Length: 117
Length: 145
Figure 1: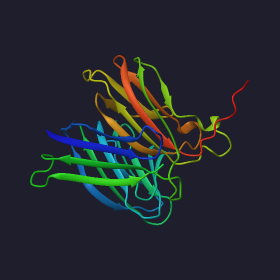
Figure 2: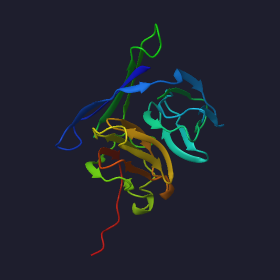
Figure 3: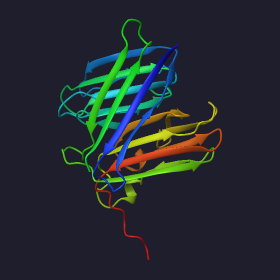
Figure 4: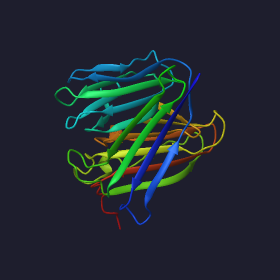
């Protein structure tokens, strides 16, 4: 069993008079399969990056392109999120529905990792 | 409202001989442009088990095309109870994952239509949930008098 330590820091100095500046840290147990940080070139066609063979997992996604957006679907046919240029996401995933990625246009690269609990 | 987000994911023992160390940064901007987001909604709420709770407004609750915007969502289950306490999160009627005690998530989100709403539902007992929704140009309809 391995330990995964994700940390998120959000900061904003001019949003409201109550400044945002905090970090949250978690400690997660990873006991099953992992997809180590990987990078894949996408097209406008679906590419399954997270098959349903995974159980409860944690997913990291990052759009490494400077301009092109990447669409992510977790329920088939329904756009779940769009990663604009440079954006990332980290979330828990049950593995019940596969994770599919495709580009809004062109061939951007997606960086991703999956850690099965 | 220049908001920045940074994630680091580390592990000393996940891959023998190669400690994991991921770092990514992003500035939260409006859709398709480099202008900063200018609105946010944040709260800490207590929800009892089985309560479905929608984060953010529905697309049809926003005026005009105001819903077709970039949003970012941070959710943190601040419960300190055991593993029987968790928060399901999903989009529309599809559950996507579970936030156990102390777990958090951060995703970009587009409230493109009423079928894209994000919902959470605690299980196991009363969970304490912190969330923050960053967005822009959300214009809610005028309240009825």
